[in-house]
Amino acid sequence: MQIKPFRLTLLALSLLIPAALCAVILFLLIFSAQAIGFNGFGFVTRIIWDLGDLYGDPVTVRGVLVPAGANYGILVFIVGTLLSSAIAILIAVPLSVGAAIFLSEAVPSKIRPVLSMLVELVAVVPSVVFGLWGIAVLVPFIGTMLGPVMSKYLGFIPFFAGGDSGGGYGLLAASVVLALMITPIIATTLLDALLQVPKENRESAFALGATHFEVVSKAMMPMVRTTLIGGIVLALGRALGETMAVLMVSGGGLNILPHSIFSPISTIASFIVSPLDSAEGDPTNMAVRSLAEIALVLFIITLLTNAAAKLLTSGGLHVGKRK
Amino acid sequence: MSASASNAVARPVKPGRTTQELRRVISSKIGWIACGVALVLVIGPLLDIVWVVAYNGAAAFSPKLFTTSTPPAGVGLLNAIEGTAVISIMAMAIAVPIGVGAGIYLSEYGNNKLGNSIRFLSDVLTGTPSIVLGYFSYIVLVGGLGWGLAAPAGAVTIAILIVPYLARITELALRQVPVAMREAGFALGATEPTVVFKIILPGAASGVMTGALLALAISVGETAPLIYTAGFSSYPLDLAHPVHSILHSQIGYLTYVIWSFIEQPDAASHALAFAAAFLVMLFVLAINIGVRLAVKRK
Image (cartoon, rainbow over all chains, first blue to last red; front, side, top):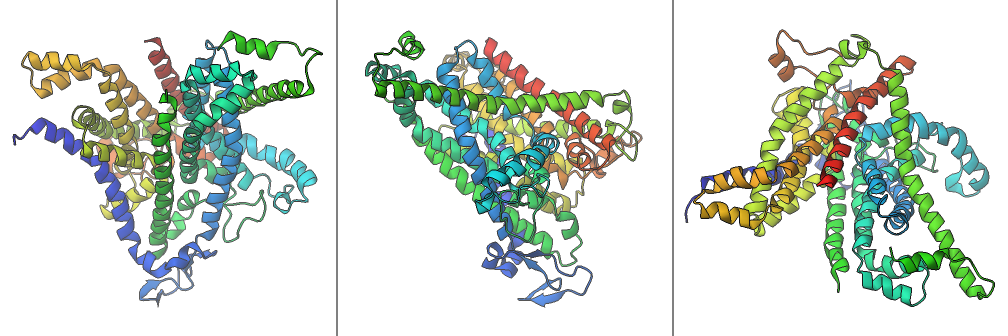
């Protein structure tokens, strides 16, 4: 076989991508190995995150040197991540489905590019700017308007009580910001699919006497269902890993599970940022290693979510092409 | 949009309709209104973000923003603007050759199992949360290799983040170049590098440029991967020793200013955060709108 230096150079460049990915997994794994051994499976079921006594003499627990009283549990962050992402999906799905339907069917095709570009632009706003807007606009709105009103009229549902305290930072603010950030992902995925539905399917539904809205909701939506679910899972992957915006509006809840939609929370991603300064003060390095384990957990969760999205969307592509 | 469809909806409700028909027509109208409201709720916050940032950012504008650094060193953003420029340029210098090279490989020679697995892993890397990449760089580059908190560690992290985008967009752009162009090149006796660099890349130049610009917008807007790789400094680059200062000292950047100064209690800090957000938004939106308009015109 002839050796082609040009091709080999290009191949080497493209292999850097998988190499970077493998390096991320490998080094996070190696670095956190001691923490994985120390924390055991209880890591994901314990509630308390305590760095221990960083200034006293370290003690030996389960064969490794850790600060006295150190206890690393991330259940609070896992719950915060899953809850905020789930609520974000609940808010974002109806909004983006409605927006996509309106864009594909009700908007004149001359205005459509402008409006769909605006929807796409939501996705390019940097996360930290969403956080800034959250602090400047959304948090005061929840703290002074939405929260008290929701508690007054919906307070009989346990999860909606307590909106008049906390000032607006918390689970609801984080979920709303996340919802806004993932809406364009679902909406553009669905819009592309709706525009691909064959003309014949639309026309036969019209011929049966359906109203325009019935054509969309009963004939077209079922055809793009798989693509829609794929888009939702993709958006979920983005929401789970979102860091800055959530960090800025979530209130940074620690060591207590959220008991209402207004409780302060932390997500896995936002928590990795906040305690690193204090973790560096740990002479045994176990806190920094446990943070690496958190990063690994987050990586695995998003990897599984994105793999599911990929399977769904690649299967869903055939829907539009069916003759 | 078929004409019959809009007629069916717009026709006034006649008294001769059955209750069931009436119910269907009314619920259809409610459905359309709900969809319209949803669209407003999706686009509205974007417009509000642009408005809030532009209003507060413009109010904070002064020449000192560009001549002095963040407090306590000054009352401006000079250090952050310099830092964002340095980190983004370094990241692009690392990422563009790798990303474009990978894109060329995937488009020209990647129609096999190896190409498919690279594509798949590239998608996985795209989906990896940026804070995970930041933490990886913190333990490997900053700590493990001893680079310290400085621009190189930040730039490499951003490069890891944007290479998959560049590779994917380059691949898509190159696939738009007709096969006949490649064949014509080879028929004239051109070698593979000549065909790639003289025929295919020039033919796909606008697409590759688009990818590079979008990647630049991403790198300017990122925060999480930089916090524990680039650190932060309230002082501008030491122009007496620029290289040493870039390679070895902590460096400021605009997104960090947004994050940390909005959480300060005083109005001057808030104004600075909004000014930084204004600059970042201006840059990101200008690139994204410009690219979309240019693509549409073709």
